[in-house]
Length: 121
Picture: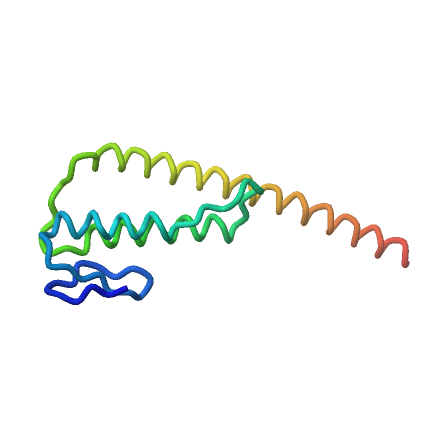
């Protein structure tokens, strides 16, 4: 989906977004396209891959927002930043829980391997 006109304002998944509208309208269009492409995981437990995908999309969104010649603050930016901070804190907490559960699983596996080795002696 390339709209060929004047200025490239961002790249979304390898696709250049071009527009002849002013930059503010162009960024709104880019954000609308971004919202349509972000697929949130189902209600199943999120794994490391899901967390990585959410983190990657967050970083891409921030990079796109910052990749303009002249950054201008928009209405709602401070609210969005607050939600991003909460999202990052939630992802860090979730990752810590995943790490702890994986460590517990590895401890159980090691214990069963040690028990099997003891039984073979």
